[in-house]
Length: 150
Image (tube, rainbow, N blue to C red; front, side, top):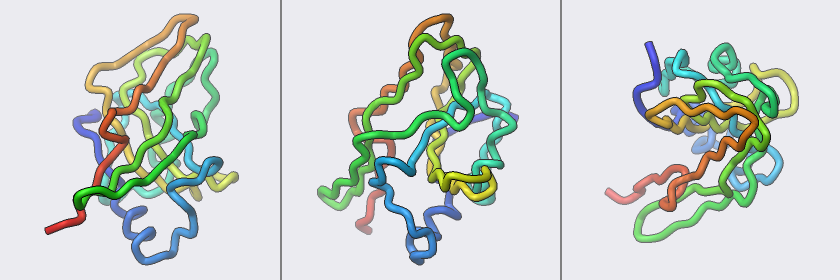
């Protein structure tokens, strides 16, 4: 199997709505993004923790397992749409092969079995770097949006 679409991880959204998560999407220290290969087969209904994707995380020079912290995170509301956004993510002077997606998660600071998955953003085409910068440039429309009006 492989990555075929971007999406939100439902079990984490459920925890957020029923207030059992206890973390803010706008945290400047707890939200991270890692890169994975096309070997990842996301299950947006059943996958819930980072250990569900770590077997397919990329590796390479200039890349640290677990990825990088998202900065400038922001939630905005306008015209019935919630938008989640952050500053672009990058790995400088990196040598990374076949990154196919970015996976956002809440980093609890311990085991990958405790880090809740948030979203997967499919690159559609794998990207690689050789002693260069791998830049994940988030959409001008945000990392994800939720239409909250019927």
